[in-house]
Length: 344
Picture 1 (cartoon, rainbow, N blue to C red):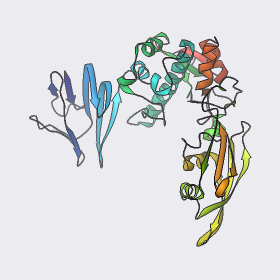
Picture 2: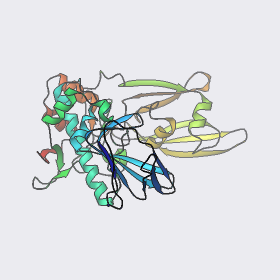
Picture 3: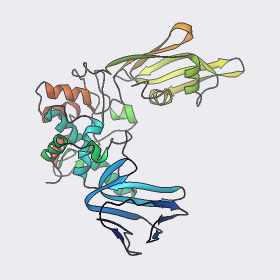
Picture 4: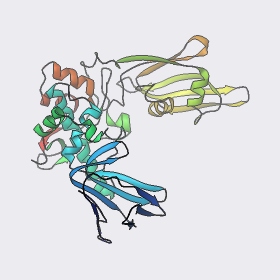
């Protein structure tokens, strides 16, 4: 059965039995249900399926969907138990087919990150805790679940990375990324602020087999000009790396713009912003060099994929294959954190 109700009890719940398709419209700050009930909700709406699943668009999720009306339609959030959430994260962020030690280590990191975000969202009185893409963690809903993922999530139930004194349960915001390229980086360098339980970067000798360990791509002058249009006018005539972090990642670079019909200018750009402008799928990390190629093209050569903080996922994968334990994998990438059980 499925039911839709206002959490504050402002109107009677709407219930339907069996497999049903409901059409909801969000307009004028209200949520309307088409059908015989003609239900109209003026505030948040919870759609629950206690014994089954719900489908929103092409995504199948468990437990509860929360709709909140706004000026431009509705926001939609899936509210569910954190352990079931992790079942849908495993194959979105890594793979249940990796060694049990590697998967378990990454589940603990993902649980720590989620719990940190939950507590932060409560403090800010936010309407949701995490988004379901790479801005937080990729959550696939039930489509991402399989028996191995669920088994390994259950085996580490409640285990997190914690910071601070043993007497306090302070979850670490345990960032991770695909491939570090040989060295991770500190949260200060990547995000501009420190993070409890996460120190400076560490050497990683295990991600060399990653298909994204090293890479190269070329952009035509017009393509780079279009990418950098928000910061400069015309085609870049020069790009120079000004400084790097100890990990080798670009801290700042300078781009010179000019040409016919354009006002010459020079802009200093943070490496992370430059990557975002060019495109993070192309410029896979900020550990890169830039040179000129044929036809005045721009050639970018680099290593690694992702922001570089916290766990190197490919390194963890290879450590698990080589026989390292969960604790050894986690202590490699989060040396200042400790394992703790938040619940059973």
